[in-house]
Length: 579
Image (cartoon, rainbow, N blue to C red; front, side, top):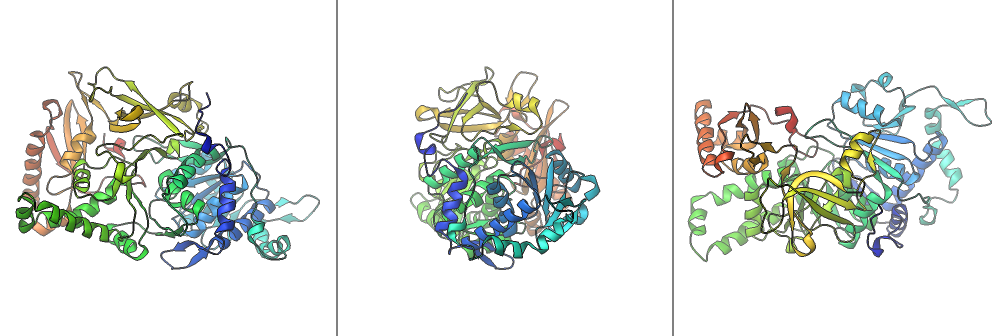
């Protein structure tokens, strides 16, 4: 069944993703496009288009044809962006491999995707076994653009002398000058038209509940996200972007790269792990116009910047006086806005549920923050509302004209304000083509009417039932012996706000709930707690938690985890490792 999205997404200039970029690169030719935060080097949109054209020529001479798979493995850098955009605009299929995957998983993805070429950072390639990836014809350095490994050379048509990938690179500058004898100009930017249903990305999910699957995203899937971003003015010409989420993940890819490049934004690529200290320093320097982040980052900044302020005795006294709290909230809001660079329109949180206490406080002080809902299988966006129209506790409104949502009612769950609860299913322009070489998983995820079963449990509210509310993942839901449904995320949200808790998981063990907690090392050190005192504090938290939850949600025991939980690159805990 074909979803009939709104007319505005079916006519020029928004009907062809690649032509959106052709126009953007030409119109913004002299403007800054990409800056490497580490080196400080900047390239313009003209430089970007020229390097894409140069890589197109390399693909052509190397025998790459539309539909071939190109794997890409490395941190966010200008060369990463150039490789991604060159592959997609050439008509090949890009396979971004998350930088944090271990070598065995990375090699599995490269092999499973049938990639014929790999672009990889120099620091990563030594950990890979080239012989164990037999379909690769060549490996190209993301750092130097040199060929660092290749297989038997191929022969050019009509020639007896074999041409190696290394010789193609050696002669690439000369051949590029022959192709563009008058220099590369805006008029030289030309991308072929491909059917919107053509796969352009195979994005392997990072997997919180099991091993990743290859999500096949089409040109139309990306176009739905990009056109929504353009029309919503999330980014605009000369807006500033700080890209710190992994671009190999659909969330960062869409809104820190694809949308900005479609309108002429200036993207600064952080290229290093976004710890709170590094991130806040970079934000102050770049002063981004929009901030895209995951809950863990916002929650950590909230604890580092806000909590120390509101727990001081003088502030607590003032907050207890009716009428004075607004003045304090204004000061806190101002400091938090300054911490985020002071020049942004809003902070969009996605990728996982935001802690309810953090959200409640940020809404109370009128911090410009909103929460969206998406998944890799939708490239990623499903719902979003601007912060001034954001309904607290929700995940925004389903994208009008692009996506629609429904609930498959669960009879074991009570209604919420007259709305049935159950699994959220979605349909529309953004929904993937399927999982690569996995028809069984595709059939289990997408039904015959085109509805994608998200695996998220919740309900819909508001006009036309478009506002999404999420309770938790179906796969993490715990069913008690009495038939009660427990969403561990809801319990974890309460526990994570208690003293000395950095992060936590609630699991089922032999019919009882157990909380696993990794302590906040800074807070423990500041208060000088011994191991015994920390244990006492955690058990005090357990008692306080059980006073807040329903009787069937009470946690029997709490265990201290010495190490942080293993996480996906988007900073979601890999829950399946702790069952």
